[in-house]
Length: 181
Image (cartoon, rainbow, N blue to C red; front, side):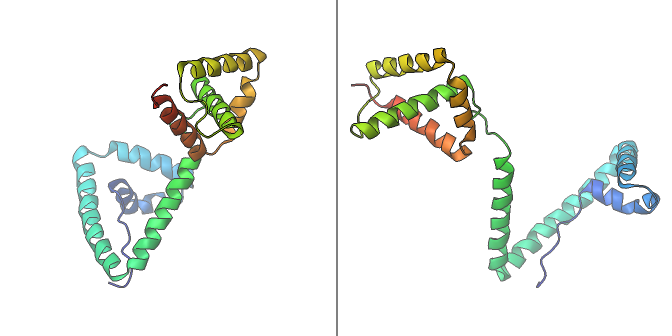
């Protein structure tokens, strides 16, 4: 097999293919409405037939694709890279759960910035997670909160890339789990 197999149509799209002559004169939005209504009126038995046919074709496609990839491993690598790239682009537009600029994350962001500032100015292990250090961080945070400067921290948090926010949260969680001295 020298040509890459094509993914088969789903049952719904196969149904559309079978009835395409009925909509030749319609605009694309009219076609979408027509097929949506027509598919809703199709019996469950007919829908099942379309979907079973699609599943059989998909199973055959998967076998054929694996055979193709064995003969053309560079194509498999290319497809995997394209899929990863598409997934990354899709994720960039979405905010993963737990990374919004809410009060908890702004507080974590502030704490990590404060910890890093003091560690840079002093020594790398300065400001261990003692109760006194945590109280000092909370007091400093309350001052920022009272000054009304939290919105700038929220803006800074939102401007960070998703992986940077994840890194900050992971750092804070590790720091908070360190044994107190």
